[in-house]
Image (cartoon, rainbow, N blue to C red; front, side):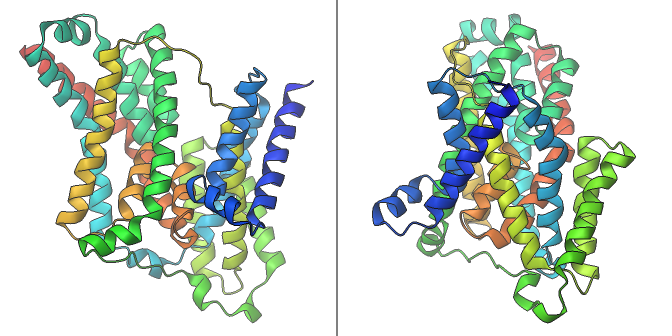
Length: 381
C-alpha cells in the first residue's frame, strides 16, 4: 500500500476512535481516559499500530504537511483565541519558573558530568576523553528548542553520526514517557495546590466575554485561510512562520470585533489532536546502543530539572499547574505543551504556546551556553 495512503488511513482511524471515545459515558472507559487522555491516546495509537505491523512511516509526506500546514493552522487558531487580558493575568512568576527550567536544562549536564568525573575515573574517560558529552548538547537543543535547535547544535558541537542517532532514540523515548507523566501531574495540580496552599491558575479568555451576535464565522475562516497562506507565499522558515502567525493570531483575536474566538479554540484543539496523531507515526522503540552511565545521567538530568521547578513553585507560591506546562513547553514544544495543558483546561492552551514559542526561539542559545560551559570546564581539568 502507498505510504501516504497508509499514513492517512491510520491517522483517520485514530481520529474516529478518539471522537467515539469522547462521546462514551461508560465508567470503565472514563476510568481508562483518566490515565490515557484522548489527546495522548491519539499519540500512542499510531505508534502501536506501526510497531505491531512493523511499519516505518517516519519519513512520509504527511509529516511535511503537518509541519507546513497543520501546525500553523493550530498555532494561528489557538493564538486567535487568546485574550491579551488573559495573558496579562498569568503574571511574571510562571514566566520566571519557565526560564529557570530552561537554565537548569542548560546547566545540569555540565554539573552532572563534573560530579561524575570527580567520583570516577572511568566516568571521566567515557564523557571527556571519548567526547560522549557532545551527545548531551543536542539534547539541550531538542528539549528547549526542538529539532531545529537540535540539528544546529549537533553541527556546532561536532556530535558524531553514530552518537547522534542513539541520542535521537533515547531522547524520543524519554520525552514520550515524560509527556505521559506530565499528563498525570497536570490533572493532579488542583489537589497539589490545595495540599501545599498554592493558588489556582487564573483562567480567563475572550470566549467568556464574547457577544456571539457580533461574531462572523465565515469572515473568521476566511482570515484564517489567508493567514495560513501568507507564510507559504512569503517563503518563510518554520520558525518565522510560527512566530509570525502567533502575532497575527493575537492581532486577529484582539482587534477584530467580529472574530469568533470559540470557533478558533475548537479548530485549534482539533488541529492539536491531528498533529499528535501524525507525530505518533514517527515513534520508534527499536533498540539503541548507549553506555548505561549515559542513560542514567540523562535520567538524573530530567528528574533534577523537574525537582528544581517543583520546589521553585513551592517557594514562590506559583500554581502547580504551571510546573507541567512549563516543563512541556521546554521539553515537549509547540505540539505537546498545549496538548498537556488541554488535559487541565484548554483555555490555558494559548499560554502554553507562548511559553513553547519562547522555548523554540531560545533553544539554540541555551545549547551554545551549555557548549561554552563544557569547554570551560574541560579546559580546566
